[in-house]
Amino acid sequence: MSVYHYAEHLKIASILETSRLNVDEIEYPALARVHAYWDAVRGDAFAPSLRQFRIEDLDPAIIPSMAIVDFLGPPLDFFYRFFGSHMVEIAGLELTGKRYYADNVEGYGFVNAEIFPLMIAEAQPLVHRTKWVSVKGLHYVTTTVRLPLSADGDSVTGGITVNQYQSADI
Image: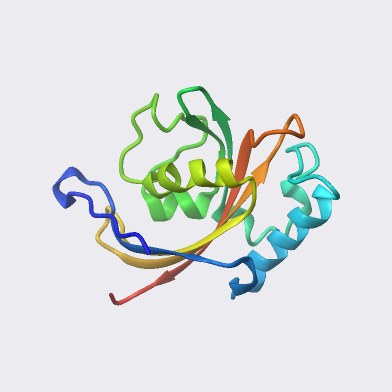
């Protein structure tokens, strides 16, 4: 289990703790369905391409809690191709069309900055549960499934994140 702390006065959300789960520990049906869809469209490949993973084929109710990113670099940066409206509401920022490092995104995404490199290295789905406080001072427990994408069939070139947010009294 890793624990991260960020300064509140910087208007950056605070991570209280994050822990890794196994894929079979996904407890939310919507997250499990997105993982099952990803698994089906990848076939024998380690990851599907974005062309194969069609967001419009998913339950529309989960799409606002999803993001699609392209990995750029080196050095590694990630471009938010899509940042769902529920994520905008929770984060307090719109990240669609932004690059995490190049655009100096603050207040959201730092868990991805820690975990995306791990997903790239392992080239497999990752599931995490994170307890955090938003820039608005709201407490959440978020379960996130991160799914690799591959444009070339050999390397991780992007990713999908899908989140289940729960308000929490921490």
